[in-house]
Amino acid sequence: MTDVLISAENLSAGYGSPVVEGVDLAVRGGEILALIGPNGGGKSTLLRALAGGPEKLGGAVTLCGLDADRLSPRERAKRMSVLLTDRPRTDKMTCREVVELGRYPYTGRFGLLSPADKRAADEAMELAGVGGLAERDFSRLSDGQSQRVMLARAVCQEPEVMILDEPTSYLDIHHKLIFLDSLQRLAREKAVAVILSMHELELAEKIADRTLCIKDGRVFRAGTPEEIFKEKILRELFDLPEELYKKYFKKGKSL
Amino acid sequence: MRYARFKTAAVLGGLFALALLFFGLNVFIGSAKFSFGEAAARLLSGDAIMWKIRAPRAMAALLLGGALALSGYLLQVFFHNPIAGPFVLGVSSGAKLAVALLMITAAAAGRTLTSVSMVGAAFAGSMLSLGLILLISQRVGRVSLLVVCGVMIGYICSAATDFAVTFADDADIVNLRSWSMGSFSGTDIDSVAVMAVIVPAASICVFLLSKPIGAYRLGEGYAKSSGVRVGLLRAALMTLSGLLAACVTAFAGPVSFVGIAAPHIVRLLLGGSKPASLIPACFLGGGIFCSACDLIARLAFAPTELSISTVTAIFGAPVVIAVMLRRKRGEAV
Image (cartoon, rainbow over all chains, first blue to last red; front, side, top):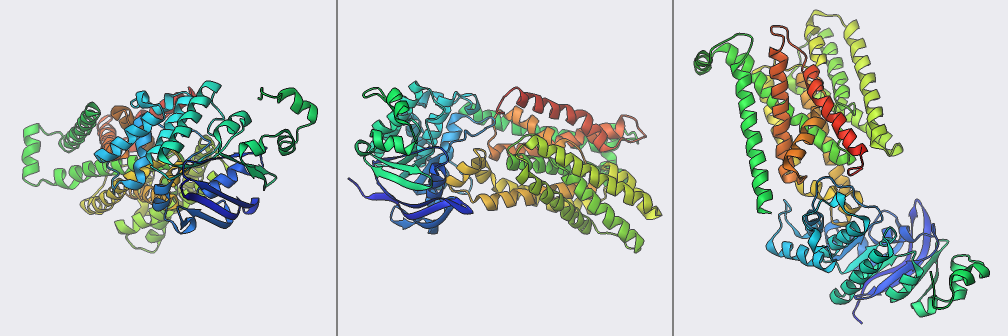
C-alpha cells in the first residue's frame, strides 16, 4: 500500500456547535473509505469539514502530509477535489466546459487552457465514461449522466484525495454500478484516496476497502467490510428490530 | 470548437459594429434636423449642438448602458439567477434616494455638486440597498422572493425620494424631477469625462474576474473546492455591481430592466456563458440597448422627450417575462 494521503485526528465538525466529534481516520492512495450510518448522524458535515469547509471546529486534518488548515484554496484544490450532493444549475455550459473547470487551480490569470489541460479533461471524461457527452448542454443531462460529468470534473482536477457526498443517491441501479465502477477504477489506477458517504449498504460492502460507521455524531465502528457488515452491527447502527432485519437482509440477498 | 470560437468572434464583432452604428445615429439624428452632409460639416467644425449636446449624450447612453448590463450580469452571477438586476433588486432606487438627498441638501446650502460627489452618494446608496438585500437573502432562499423584496425596497426608496423632492421645492432642483425619472439629457462633457474613467475601469476589473466568475457558475461549493476565494469574489461582485449601478444612477437616474434584458439577449446570441466573451458582449449589448432606447426616447414624440426608463421598460420588461417563463418550464430551474 502507498502512503496515507488524508488523515484526521480527533476531528470535530458542525455548525457553531459540533455535530460529529472525535473522528480519527486515515486513507491511503488507491483506497476507498465508505461512511455509512443513519441520516442526521453527521456524515455530510464530517465530509465538508474534511474538504476544508467552515464546518471544521476542532482537531487536525492532514492532507498529503501537510496541515490542511494552512493550505491556500488553490494549494488545497491541487490535492483534493469533491463531488457534492447538489447538482449545479448551469446556464448554457457544455459538459466539456464543466469538466475543464477542474483545471482551475492549474491555469493562469485568465483561466486559459494549455493543450495539456485539454488532454487532462479528455482523459477524465473518458475515465468517467462521458467522452461522448462533451459538447452536450450540461443542464439537459439525466441525473446519472450529470453525476458522471461531475466525477470527470473532480478527476480532471488531478487530486490525490477525492471526497464524495452520497454520489449514488439519485441514480438508478444501472448508473449506480457504472458510477461506482468508474470510481473504483480511478482509485486504483491513479492511486487516489477516496472518501465517500453512501446509503446503499450492499454496494458499500462491495466497493469499500474500509468502512466507517457514523451514528449520533460519533464513530460507532470502523473496520473492513467483512468486520462491519454483520447483523449485530448493522442492526445496532440503524436501530433495526430483528424481524425487520431478517425480512430484508436474508443471507445472500441483501437490499 | 473552431466553430464556437468563430461564432463568438462574429457576435462580438457584430455587437461592436452595432454599438458604433447607434452611437453615430445618436450623434447625427436629433430634433434639429440636419442633412447627413450638414451634420458631418458641423461635426468637423466643432459645432456646439454636435459636440456639447449630442456627442456627450450618445457617449453617456453607450457607457452607462454597458455599465448597467454589467451591473446586472454581476448580480445574476452572485445570486445564480438571470432575473437579478440593479433595478429589480432596488439598488438603483437606493442610489437615487442618496443622490436626491445630497442634491437637496446641497441646494439648500447654496452649493453646486461635482459629478464625483454625486457618484459617491449614489455608490453609498446602492451599497446600502445591496446590504439590505443581502441581509434579506440570508433569510429568504428563493431569488423570486428576493426580487419581490427588492421591488419593495425600490418603492420605499422612490417614495422617500418623491417625498423629499416635493417638499424641497427649490428652483435649483428643477432638474431633479426629470433626473429622478431617468434621462440621458443634459449630459455634459465633464460628466462624460468622469464616467469615461469610472465605467471602463470598473469594467476592466470585472473582466479580470472572468476566471473565478467562470468557476462560480457551478455554485459556491464547487467554486470553493476548485480553489476560488469565494468570500473575496462575492465582495468584489457586489462592490463592482454597486459601483456601476451607482455611476448610472448618478448621471442618468434610474434606468429600468437593461441589467436583465441585455445580458439575457447576448447570452442567447453567444449560445454560451463563458465570462471572457460574455462580459464584453454584455457591455456592448447594454450600450446598444440604451443607445437605441435613447434614440427612440428623443425622436418618437419629438420635441417632447420620453424618459429613458419608459422606453427601456417597453423593450426590456417583456424580455424579463420571457426569462421567467423559460425558467418556469424547468430549463435550468
